[in-house]
Length: 206
Image (cartoon, rainbow, N blue to C red):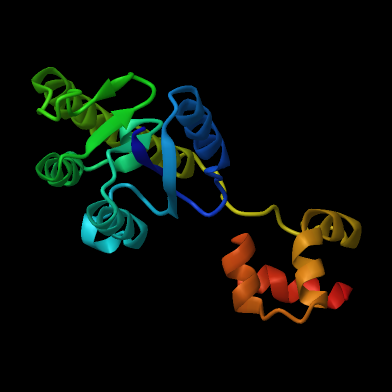
């Protein structure tokens, strides 16, 4: 039975990686793989590998626990910087650990533990395409934003706009519940991703 690690990543605090973990858990069960650990992080995939604590923890874990595979839903979950992604894959190759990419159904190593040249070729292309797509999307957003401002558009809340107490209580029910438990503003911020200023406003509803 193959021993595997699941790795999931989202870019922001408002996103959730539960779907990724669920899909990969189902995949593991279907293939009779033993899940030894699950690593999840909320960080931009464009960051350097040395800045990504969960990625570093995962690499250390697979080295120490004779893991056979690391599984991800998409290559971009491992990272968006082509060179950084290939650096991780190269480390896995040297350790005899295969990277399985679910949406393409490809692995970096063959069953005999040899480097799969076709998958390596595809991964290099896919990583670069993912990086270019991300860059193009960011440029389009920035261009649209500048064009909107240049044509007199305004950003931010409308003047005089303020959420009602009912709306605040409904939207920030979890934050209010945690405040009532005596949890600090900063810890609630870490748990929910809600800004400290907004949580401070919620204190008035306790």
